[in-house]
Image 1 (tube, rainbow, N blue to C red):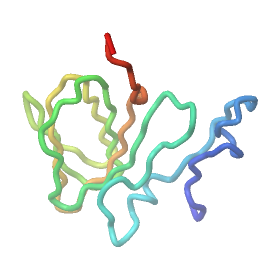
Image 2 (cartoon, rainbow, N blue to C red):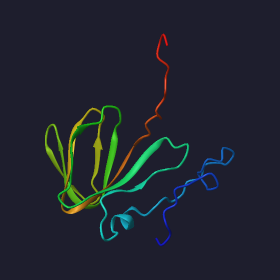
Image 3 (cartoon, rainbow, N blue to C red):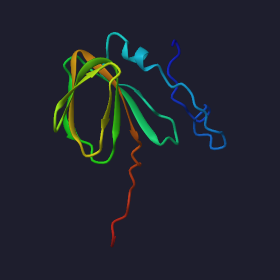
Image 4 (tube, rainbow, N blue to C red):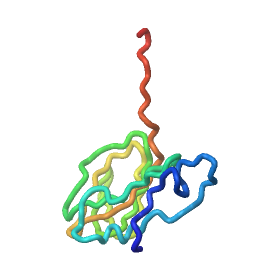
Length: 140
């Protein structure tokens, strides 16, 4: 895939034109993005379409990199391993991750993630968090 991934916009299919019918479309080639050398760490791609109900991120951990133990209290997350390997540690066990692994991370679950010797690239998908809302204080 030679073109730059399209992220949408007001004048594009799936953009913010309220009169246009939503149209499914290819967003990126996750394997191609994960294979870029030198291998950058962090977010390689983010779903950015307006009006979406989901969030998605393609993330790369460097070799032996990790995400410390945490709990996501509100959102279930699907994690799909695009390339590399690693482990996810849960409150009950350690699960190996390899290319093609699909993991459900239910809200409220405690987990950490560690990349193997070759690093780990993974896609996460979850419900979009509502935007920050500013509310007035009662009695102000």
